[in-house]
Image (cartoon, rainbow, N blue to C red):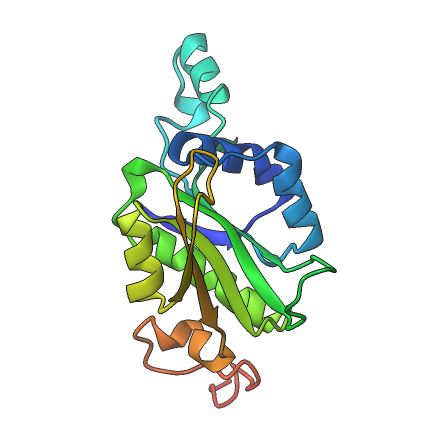
Length: 212
């Protein structure tokens, strides 16, 4: 099963909302996803798979076709969104901290696609984009105290630090960990964590030295 991580587009917002509604208690209206993607188009990503029940030309009955068309996870023929990360830059003009920094609003992976490293890959793409494109010096996020899997990802894998506990941060009254990660672009390069033999400095000619 191949998973592709790509930049989110306006065409993805309904499927992103679907992944949110199925997995998280914090839900958003479609316009909130659109606001993120239109304002910071490089900061949000989706995980997709082309694995589906059947290709459309293999569908045998009208009922099967309607079931696939009714599934909001599918955004095109055979392409299904199984996760997303929603990122942004801090845009509050009244914020005390004027340092350019990003914020991860939401991260979600469908339950049947977890434990495959998808959430980590989505986060790494978002962190790199926020640093490279928007020059964010750090990224913040909140996570429920009870969400041990997310805490492990942020603190132990991605090296976020816990700044504080915000009491009753969520609507149901649960506390949240306020977390932060200082961004250093050279440490966020894909080659830094993909066991690559060569490091891409993003400046050299990739064709240099190849025989004609």
